[in-house]
Length: 416
Image (cartoon, rainbow, N blue to C red):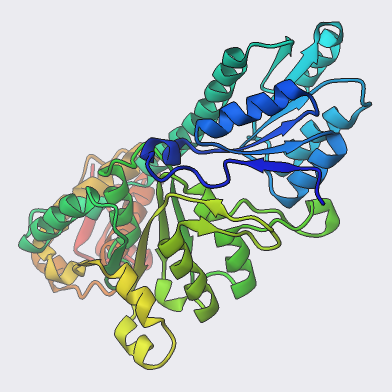
């Protein structure tokens, strides 16, 4: 029988706030005070696991790395430092709080130098430790959100740019969908900006302060996609296995975007459906379930009904995802948006390439409207970025011939 004890494995359903802030916390100590601290943290809605010594804790983190560790510095040798190093080997962002008797202050300071978040001396006040726990978890969450916001600000494209009738209708649907918690299915051709629209839904939703995590279901082999989505708990990297928290856990409280969902293997379709129904995920090799609060937005360019008829896609998963179904129009159906898109792409490309001195992009609207745009908005974006790149090289007056040599249509040229 394991010496570890788990508390609060299922956060109370009546507390949405607790679900959003729920964290998996490992408390390493055999003392009564640690048991009482673990109980207090579980009452707050966290999933708390106890380990009585460093060796027990090492076995626990090998199975699944927690979101935060509280470990005691005592007279048990170097086990406590091993816990700190083992956790940070797997995930350097996990905060570790150490508790130490007053005579071990030097060791506690050394632990902080090695990467511990903070230390408190024992006997400690429960409210003091809980304050540091809340600060550590909030700092970690803020770093993840700030990183995501910086990335989104850089990646944000012309997904919502446009005043055409199809775009006005799409904007209204996106605004209505954002306030919901139901899964969303985005349908549309390649290059229409489905991921960018998923990010827009997330940014406009109450989940905006929580992570947005994206994965392509067509780009990874089945086993790798399995561990990427649900996590992998078998061993340390040194043992030959790669530990993964799993994207459902990474997106907890936020949004998980499943691109190319129509290419997901049937076995994983079943696992995704179970997570959507039960809001619990089990990592590969793990023995425990983890509660997650995730909104799933899926996207596909395939005809899922055809794949259902062919036995390649689960009808119950399609029904679950298709509660809110949005069709993204191709660029050829919203050609009047091209001037606004070009100016937006050009302004962003100039910010990315300060050496570019092009002030604007001249357009032959008739020629652009005649273009088929098989790559949709992404094709237009790439063309404009190449134009700005040419301007940075000094080729400001791009002729038709030069434009074609760079894969640009003659209807676009840089104006200085």
